[in-house]
Image (tube, rainbow, N blue to C red; front, side, top):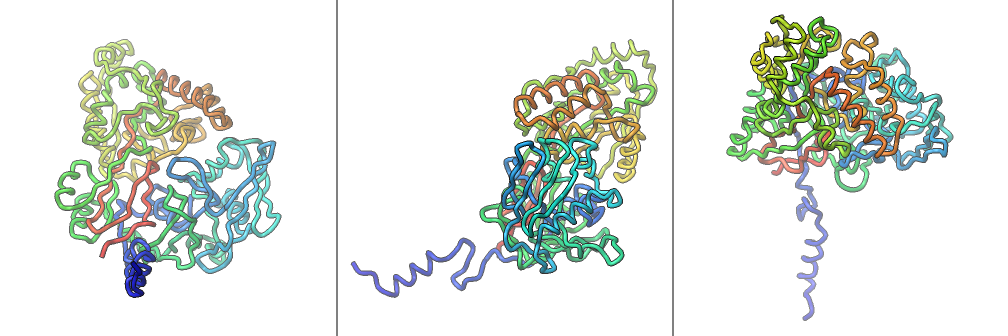
Amino acid sequence: MRMSKHLRAILILTTALLPGESSAGQDLRETDVLTLAIGGDISSSDPGVDRDSTSDTVLHHVIEGLVAYKEDLTVGPMLAKSWEISADGRTYTFKLRDSLKFHNGDAVTSADVAWSWSRYLDPKTKWQCTYRFDGSFGSKVEQITTPDRVTVQFQLSEPDALFLANMANIQCLTAVLSKASLKADGSWDKPIGTGPYMFGKWEHNRYITLERFADYQSLPGERDGLAGGKHAYAKQLKFLVVPDASARKSALYTGEIDVVSDFGAADIEDAKARNTSVSVQSSMAWQMLLLQTEDPILADLRVRRAIAHALDIQQIANAATYGLATPNPSAVPTMSPYYGDKQTIWPAYDPAAAAALLKEAGYSGQKLSIQTNKKFENMYSAAVVIQSMLQAVGINAELEVLDFAAQLDNYYSGKFQLMSFGMSARLDPAYSFETFMGAKKDDASNQWEDPDALMLLAAAKSESDPSKRQAIFDSLHARLAEQVPIIGLFNDPLVTAIGPKVRGYADWPAGKERLWGVWRER
């Protein structure tokens, strides 16, 4: 039977529509504003400088580097379309993608890459990841050259198995920036990058707005970690500072906020009853109890081991996360391919053994203070349970609840006995160990300065063979279990509440919220 011209035209029109498009050609995913609640203000708009986790989350929408982590935790292309590594492993040659633009309309060239990196490596910038590239830990970037407008070469002092991973590190933010990011006097102004959103208005302690970049050149395909396609459906993103968890929840239910991360696990069922979606996923962030090994009481290994025996980390994980987290004493995250049975080995929960060790050490009831805060629910809840368990074996444990900024200052200066603390996601185990390893005289926040362990960490950074790295991480964890400079508790679950009209949102193991690919249903 012959199809009528009218019917054929209808079929052509219908099949030509893209998902989310109306027959009038309008993309139904187009959204005016998406609002995400954040618990506190950002520290800085300068990528990787005076940073914190919230600053990283906001700026990942604005800036991009040559490479980025993908969903499967491998490193993929971002501004670089390809790269080659020389036979001696010391030269990395990157080719830039075509037609890249900065937010001010200028074309991105290899000279901009070289300028951005020279700025980062200048000690005056105070970039927090300089040590990864100046020879302090691993290889040194000795020279950056630009053979042509789309080619940039990095010359290293020695082969470095983690060079690309360092470039993609989600805490470093190795952004390629326009020189216009600086004021005329050379001081920082605002980030002019290449991401799907431009830095807009920052009302300190109130909100940050980002505006969609109309000329953004997205990679093909779907969202993939911090790589892949970045489709900006919202014209504006608003990161609203709401420190109080109850206020964040109320604003979500009234529709003033679209997405709330760090949502309370206790509120999940209530949220679902209100037609609010809740995403729960394991992450690579890590909760821990820090032990100040220079403290007169905690310098005694027997006391530290007694504390380890006194703590049932299964119960702590259950209580702090309402059963959502798996206990993990290891710096190797449970989601890592390097996590295995050897990472579960730890001094067993044994109150009798704890009491015996305390007696052997001559402990006689001296106070041990556990610092914590109420900004992060998991840290506080874990501290409460830890206090109870320590008291049960005869340790005079007291809670010291501080403002998080004050606790953070104490962490960096080493002014604590015990501290309930957490580290944001590190996507390679070497980075997880690195957060608490090193000489205290160089950095008071370092927890573990065992020379043999530091040698193992250095080996993990230079080794590329997965089986050899596995053996290194197994050995590191075994030494950690012997010396107990910290006690790992659990990898944080990601709990995100999403408004009933929000579509396209998804968490991933790195725990960084991504609002590209997200829209609000009309």
